[in-house]
Length: 281
Image 1 (tube, rainbow, N blue to C red):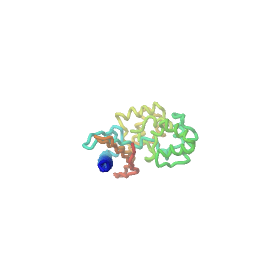
Image 2 (tube, rainbow, N blue to C red):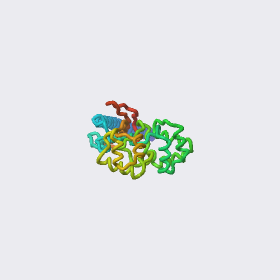
Image 3 (spheres, rainbow, N blue to C red):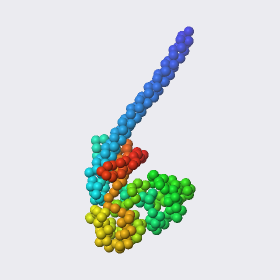
Image 4 (cartoon, rainbow, N blue to C red):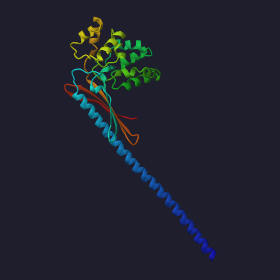
């Protein structure tokens, strides 16, 4: 009888211990889940704060462009300077890029594309033909996608690795801003030479071109031949009408970042958004 009672007590004790064990596990799981939920809410809140901080950067860039002198645009102006600032919420970086300094792949002439091949020999005749046949493109990435489909990706990869893609745009009116265009782009324009391109870049560093009407005479004073001036005038201007805004907002305490990108046109005292997207890290 005594042994039976002890046995029952032992069984009850074991059951109680198992119950306590499972309850402890449940408490630990619920506690971990609760901590995870709290952390997720905190991360979501911080992500939302970074988004609004990035939006603040977009508005800051737009304000800079509105206040800028629209008669001409050069790399000496405030809009061309990359801005980094420390905010209470985190670090904000704002960059404005002139799309008129790039070759517009949608309306560039076949002559210029063939000139590109001279400086980028990796580019093939087939690539040039594919681009001319399949444009217009909405985004530069579509050019890469086209070549990947057309040639199993090998030619597309070679095209991307040349970094020629960094010289292209699918926005702007097709005319290049002579005050911001790179030497690498200038040299592929009809009639241009490396020495002429270097002369233009050196001159504009301290004396940007400020008038389309005076541009022909200004270029002649730099030593360009009449033929070069005539060809160049058809391709360039002194002002820009499309800008790309890149903004990054990164939190102070955690590695959370929001990257926003906006492309807008600027014409007749008005700004119009052409593209707006959130880029992932």
